[in-house]
Amino acid sequence: MTWSEAEYVECLVSERRRYAWVMRRYGGLALAESWAAALASYPYEPAGEPHRGLVFHDEAWHWAMLALHGHRYVVERPELEDPPAAYRALP
Image (cartoon, rainbow, N blue to C red; front, side, top):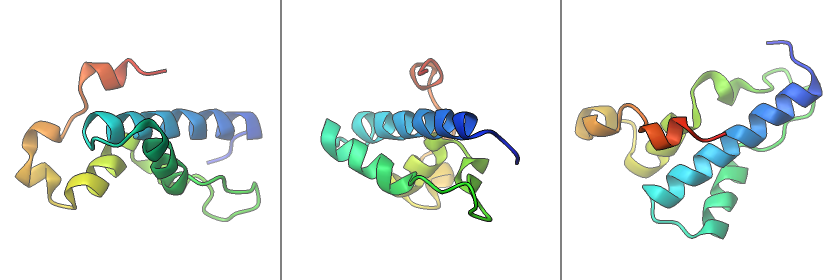
């Protein structure tokens, strides 16, 4: 995907925010811990990186659920397959 630096950073910040929200709401992490987890999962990648932004191919909900419940979360916790309206409403 080709995007400007501003578009990439905007997407990065948005996905970090969503990931941290899930980790607080569903993982019980404190604010600082949730942001640390988000930064670890969504590090800044310089413009020249060949797979820059690949993490965006799935939304933060999915990556957070994998971290919290493992690869079988959709089977074992089907109620978590789709994010709730509160998640969708996040900026």
